[in-house]
Each structure stands twice: as C-alpha cells, then as structure tokens.
Amino acid sequence: MKITSKGQVTIPQAVREKAGMHPNSEVEFEVRDNGDVLIRAVVPKANAVRAAFAQVRGSANAAQFKNMGTDEFMAFLRG
Image (cartoon, rainbow, N blue to C red; front, side, top):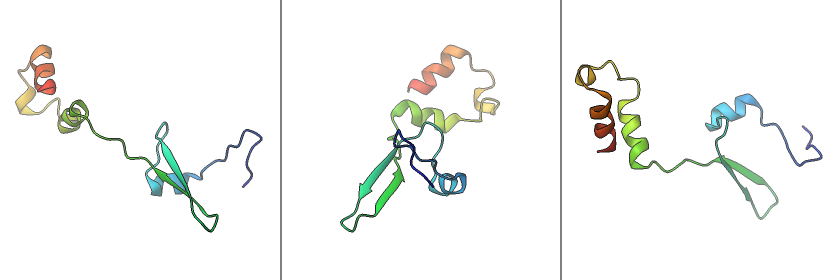
C-alpha cells in the first residue's frame, strides 16, 4: 500500500468494518515509542438529542407513537 503525494492512504474495507469505521467518522492516531502507528475510530459522545433519537429509531410505527402528532413527538424527543 502506498501513501499518496497528499499523505493519504486507503484503509481496506475489511479493516474499516472490523474497526467500526464508517464514512465521515473520525479517527485518531497514536505513534508508539517503537515507531508503530495505531489508528482507532473515535466514538462520538452521545448528547441528549442523539440519545432520544437512538431510543426511538425504527419505532415510528410503534403503538406508543401511533396517535402522536409531530409537535407531540418532537416534545417527546426533546424531553
């Protein structure tokens, strides 16, 4: 694998999948004392809104939301 003139390298798909790296995700690098470079996915910190969306993701047809209007649903998400 070669580094481009811009300092870029392609991380193989199998490696990205195993490491949980997705498009537009962030990574961080660590250079160890022996010169090895470690790259890892940065896990984004969940904020309250993201946590609320995660709670209801895929459940718009759930019974608890069936008769809920948009304003009510947004109020639910905002806590």
